Length: 636
Image 1 (cartoon, one colour):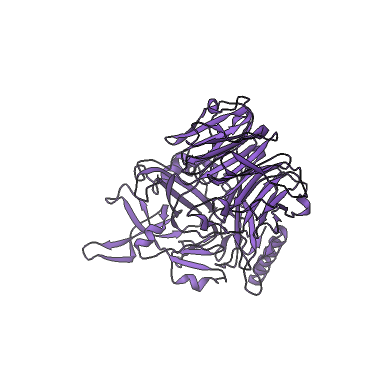
Image 2: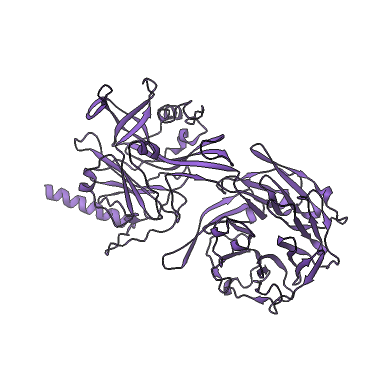
């Protein structure tokens, strides 16, 4: 009978593999190639023998599917960025592009470009000579129409503006060869040419007062090294009448891009321009912007970029990449079909492109061990239905201290502590119950456990038993760190100290939340400076058994044991609309986990913040061979 039962179980497992179309990704030679996808850390595997067994123990595996190192505790300064587009639309982000908001402009004209000489004050320009000033007031931004400062009586379209950071100098160019200059941060403008070409100028580029470039229609390339004087430079013979749309220069080396796959390249200060070849598939595409980080000008941050690396964006979602000054351009495959108008990288690994239909792309690029480059797009945002024509990235206005942590519903066992002798007996419990508790790196550090940063493709095992772990699992070949986190804590209003430290065991039904909380301070402050804002983010969730979020109020009351009102800057972050209390995060759990099995995430699932998709049974499967240190054993 027992052998028959085992045979039935074996057949069931085989059928499950066939029906799910699963692919075994564990390679026979013991190697591993974790793919560089995903935005943030994820829960990749959970193992538990519930506390109704005398040999109960549990562990949680966290995986880094991103191409960057992630520290459990980190201090960052996220960039502030602005986008401008059709119908007077203006957007901005203060968290490095994670979220975007709109700024009313009260105009209907299209805006073509934007530039900020100061981190909290800039100008946007557009149709009919429009000039819009953008200023920061408190925590938000406002805009004002200041087109009256435009000295052009014809009010021609203004197509491009460049204001040097922390400088008083700036240029604007527009239709019919218009060139304007300011020497007081845009308070007043004056025409800045002795002769005026009839062609529309589309872009302006300069780094210092005596060297500037302007490009435009009908093959126009202008260079200025003397006040008000602009000399025409010959375009490449391959496209003498191309309509150029953007340019960038590194001293005497420069790139000019435009319609029908036009790339004009010079390394002689513009005395000679030659064309650069592009992939055949994009030879007919209009190129709208070009970016080289090393061309940003004199800056202490230029070591953030690779000298020879550059980018081009164009129509139909085209993105080109080079690592050799444009000798070869490689097309980056994307699912985007919208025209892309602007591209900027805040460092050599992370950039942004914007374009039609409200499109905002996050682009991540990193060098592989073999010397090649991998590029992927982890985030696509749609901000309104406008066409975004240009953008501008500023240095950070805030400092953000971030810390990852784990919330879990588990069995809590408060151990005996004798204050007179200052001794602890972990085998004697004074209180045992079920509820939420919190585990974070700061608490572990107090116990002498330092959680090291997670490299790309690496894992972290957080376990409640330091002995049985190795005896019951087979550790894979991946980069694996381990933390014995048997002790964690929760808040208890009935306790005199308010904090109870407990041992924990995962239950046969429960949930685990991977969270990150961010504390913002003024830009000039470090952690411990002037507090601005607290934000808590749910990064990932896994649920199993018969766990359900029955009611948001009950749920909030339970979570108050982790984040009670008044504990964190006097704000109750367990209540709606905080997503932790949102009952929509009650998707179907995985089910009861058989003894000896683990909850594993599919290899091609990298987590999601979509509340209708997070933690569905389509994200996890039950694995009968726990293998910590593998990114997964199966693909969907």
